[in-house]
Length: 423
Image (tube, rainbow, N blue to C red):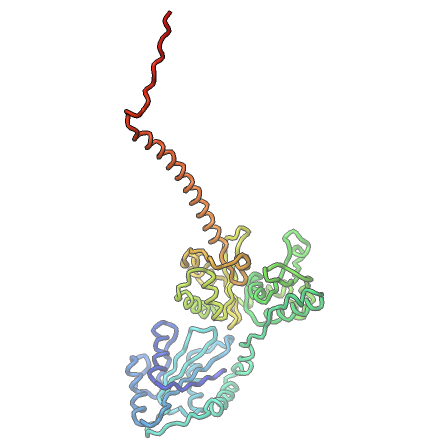
């Protein structure tokens, strides 16, 4: 369990933050402790007045608000009753058990977490000292609660959240087999053990951001027929380079059979993380990006890597999102109809991304433009050119006819009759 404490200057600001989440359907107020009414029976101003009544008893204090978030590991499925009991124990242990406080369950992230809002002013007008409360009272309470409820320890939770995977240094790795194997093994091992994916394309979506791909070979080939799998390094253009490494030679044994077991296990584990990705996507779409590249850049800022799937003609037929915060992979259609490649394209404008160069256009892994958009623009330009030429020829013909029709009859030469020869 990770506990984070802040002391906002305004109790109204802290309450407003949580209540807005409730209005948007991203949170629910579970409990109002030490209030005369239940949380469901009070509106915003009734909740606020409970804090302001105490705050008015001490005009000298500058810090009167306590805002706590208790964050749990995604693997922990805690009921609302368990969350409330943990909140009660925590507030009691840090010296706020007798204070009025509100408990909110937030549902807009990939991990379960609750927020607690309270006041530091007591019934007698004195103030609860919050100096070093995070390092002292909170740390002690956190460790005791982890032990009591068998929760994932904060140290382990924070370690999992750190971005410890670095992309392959392609220039160094392709020089020899040993360098290639070491680079690939480090990345494949980390992705295999930490990320949640349910298919080989999803596994590859997570790998590709680190310049690695799992390759089954051609369908008619020996490797594919024997259910074999090799791992390759990708260059900046997405081309396979260097020496292929057999899956069986990597220590974590990421062979096809073991991957398929992961696919089945991750089916249910991914469900609880779906809402987080959808929320982040909605936030990015609310910024009104005009192109797919802009949307991908917005998502990148939220630590979500986007992979576009295109056919040989450059037509976009699929999109995959890799949430690197919660380490989970989703195809767009898995999130809902509104998040498929086709649906997202329809929501974006069809303007051509003029600022892209040729390399960016080819490199869909790095956020290149959609070749379909460029192809449509070229076809439009071609059609426009043909139409313009046709119109210019018609203009010439019409112009010639009009000039002829407008010549006065008197200026037209009469056709001379040939005289018949005298016989």
